[in-house]
Length: 261
Image: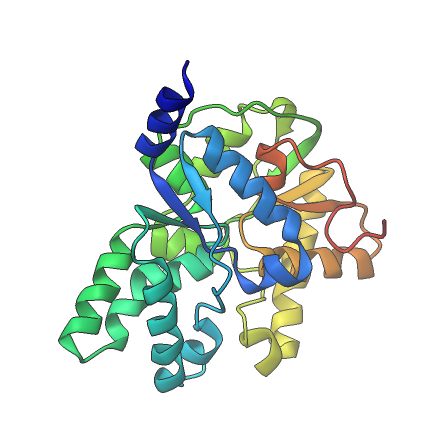
């Protein structure tokens, strides 16, 4: 293939803006690199705008619509020219896809928010539903169970997509988690406002995880994973926690979440 044809082929691929999320950027950047690998493998070009910030969810969930709208305007201006916006987090994706249009009385900003929401997807939903990816080139030797994070499941209908893709990973054994659709107790600012209730919820969750006899817990939201991984470690339960992108991309060979190098 000539350089000119290669350039034309690349230019014809959908242009994806990766919204990396605060937690991935600050605590687990390899999730972002894994997401890029998967999106490119599905046939897209990926860019990561350097001026992206928070999606505004903490302000929105605390009732601060003014600051949430100001943050949303910055996100909209940064990502609205992409063909798609992909997010390795159901909660941040749902903030953009479901709640941005509710923030604006101004007709022009409401229109721009609605347009962005229509092309914003959680990572596994984008790979499976939009790009038609049915299997990945990855291997993982372990017994995996999966937790459905609340926002991805209830606001974006993300349930079957990660499970189907995980089942395509060579060597991976999958065990369904009891009450997989029950909250882990994180809930963003909820765990800060109501720590005793949050701890009671995650205690039930880690009991279910241990009961699955899986050696690895996988989910699509880093906040939930950090919450459950911390509780598992404090309880002395030997279950590793990883983001689904790491497993699907074949990049799960380093320390699991919260574990030392």
